[in-house]
Image 1: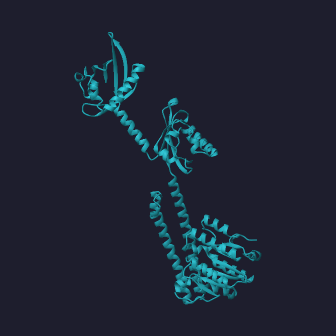
Image 2 (image 1 turned 120 degrees about the vertical axis):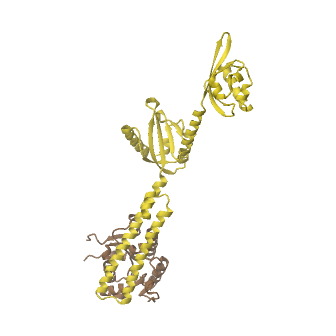
Image 3 (image 1 turned 30 degrees about the vertical axis):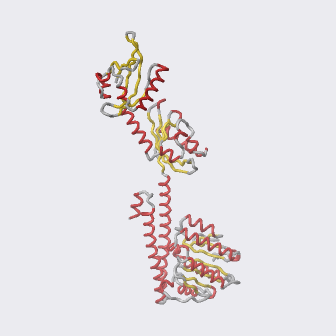
Length: 314
Length: 187
């Protein structure tokens, strides 16, 4: 939109785009100083905006990318980015104001920032030289380092990888991968959080832009709980295997032994019964153990991956 | 035939973990009792798999003096119901999972031999795995080995050689003085 103003603020020209954006026609606006009250109906906001205009104009006579929010005739809000230029026409000073409606862009930015901030994954954008440009809420939550401690700096990696040897190893791996394919996928590292806790992060990166403009997007998924669940699962399976294999071997061998003793006529009826009942009790307990393991795995440990759980549930 | 446990080690009240093939575990039990009895020790056998009545028969067949062995039987009472303890011969407890009763029975049995050479044989850790989780077994063996060391009594824990969880095996290894794998060649 383009508006031409006198130095007093009175509008002398109002183009078609200005009409479309604001809903006010040129006939309503031109020569009508009250239009500003319509565009900025909130007195407090209008006062602040006016002060800002006056302050800027006192220094340099033009605005550059000044953002204001106007109220349209229909009651909606539009965010306008203003640039102005002072010109002298026929001895009169005029201010040409060019306003770009950036409402859609701002909404998109807000939406994008909201996605970045509310994503349940650590998201960092690195500029040239590894300076952190973006550090989302999940990054703050996982690492314990707040945005203002990280953004604009390059030292967060030293903080989350405090061990110099480990940091060197990780750096070498990253450099090695990047030299081959310019990104990495599912690279697992163990970070130390601000509170001293260790978390396992699976990293994926992408490069956007090229040459001096290039930025790296690093996405980190906290897989600590998943790893713990997998370890618990392995421990369960290991325990289950041991508590199945050994007892079953013993029951089997014991039954052969009892059969041998019976065949040789060495056992009385009561002894046979006692020995067999002993083995039956063992077998019953083994079956009960298996059920207990299945229950523990399927119900108590929800962190175990679905595929494993389904397998274990039978 | 080489001995399984050394008489000097027994005299030093050492603790042993003896590993055997499942098919030979009874045979190893009998060999051990025969050796220990021959060295003048009385053995308290905690049996979790075979009843006292059968084991005592097998010992007698192998020429072991019945007086040199006392049993803590965790098998028979469950099957036969009411069985009567015979002091110095057999003490019945209801289940291998009842570690409290097992501990009391062992303590009571040891009181009967204050001045004699006594050894304890657990047969077996592998059967106990049916009734107890490995952390509980580990805790129990730790408790028992501490008690045996305090009382200066030798102890032998029998287990099936393969299939023990490496974590449990490592823990058991740290509780005993020697691990004897019966399936490995011995000098």
